[in-house]
Amino acid sequence: MSATHTHDALIIGQGLAGVVLSEALVAQGRRVAVFDVPKAGRSSLVAAGLVNPLVLRRTVPSWRAMAMLDVTVAFYHELEARYGARFWHPLPVVGLFPSPHEAELWEKRLADPEVAPFLDREPSEDHVVRSFPQPHGHGVVKHGAWLDIPTMLSIHRQRWVTAGDLVEREVKDSDIRRFADGVEVLGFSAPMLVHCAGPFAAVPGLVPVRGEGLTVRIPGLDLESAVHRKVFILPIGNDVYKVGATFAWTDVWSGPTAEARRWLSACLEELIDRPYQVLEHWAGVRPAARDRRPILGRTGAHEAVFNGLGSRGVLLAPWSAQHLSDQLFRNASVDPEVDPARFS
Ligand SMILES: Cc1cc2nc3c(=O)[nH]c(=O)nc-3n(C[C@H](O)[C@H](O)[C@H](O)COP(=O)(O)OP(=O)(O)OC[C@H]3O[C@@H](n4cnc5c(N)ncnc54)[C@H](O)[C@@H]3O)c2cc1C
Image 1 (cartoon, helix red, strand yellow):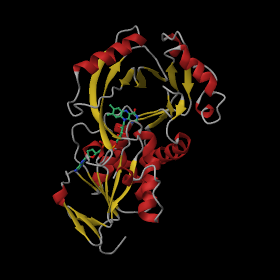
Image 2 (image 1 turned 135 degrees about the horizontal axis):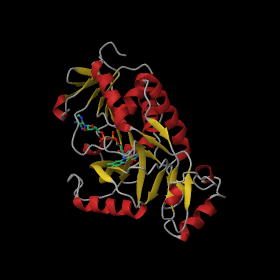
Image 3 (image 1 turned 135 degrees about the vertical axis):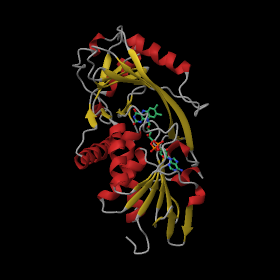
């Protein structure tokens, strides 16, 4: 750390991006301070937290899925050890085929060496999955997981506030003082300020996308896999499931809507024929990039952006944090696919 700065990096935002980056930097021995005020519509706290490395509609891996998975699994395991808590829960992801075409595609992809590592050759062992209506069958995706994001974020918040390294304040642009050798924010200074402000940021190429979902109690269902048919049903324990999510590109800040609730309930009722209780109806705004790649890198001599995590933030965040920290502190070059400059 420079003698003239209080920290090595300052971070605005304590969503997935800010949490993963701050912990990645601390693990490298850097001093970091985070600023966050919980804003309505923020993404991470409402995210279901599902990791599905397959684009089910096309039966292809999501962007760089295998490379991401290695980094992702190692990162969350290490963080669990550091926090003495459990929030990474591996589980099978089951796609119910909507038509014979998807069933045929699945068979075809089993012979594709790029895709086959993500596909289970066997049907689901979960007896509840077999009780769902599925005239065209189903496929089981390997390497799925559920990240309990609220638990992870709340432990981070508690630890960082206690250490005096998380300031619960909104940072306005007028709070940022820019100098030749770094930045100062609310009395903290560092050679680097990283904006992890999610959908609230004005970043070129960023498209905010509203998502809604339900948390429901379904007594006695006993489902142990995440199941997808139009929506995901994700088991989170004690008969409680997350059901979602919707995608909307207009009125993104309007919060939960009756229309989405009706649609989510109808999708759920197509799958289960037992009573359920809605515990919560949630809405948030995904920070998506126009080309569905993260937006990572320097935007000035002492500022950088970490955004564009879109609908797969859990999977993308650890690799993205590592790539950004290599750029900022090890002079690595930016991967052109994530370079913020691609939109300018
Ligand atoms: C309904 C829904 C379901 C989803 N489901 C999944 C899923 O199952 N799996 C998955 O991988 N991803 C999912 N996502 C996507 C995932 O939530 C995002 O990719 C990820 O959470 C984005 O994190 P972020 O840190 O960039 O943004 P955010 O989580 O929005 O965090 C930004 C933070 O910065 C704060 N902030 C902003 N500006 C300031 C400021 N000026 N001063 C102080 N604080 C500020 C905000 O209040 C917020 O706390 C879902 C998203 C939604 C909306």
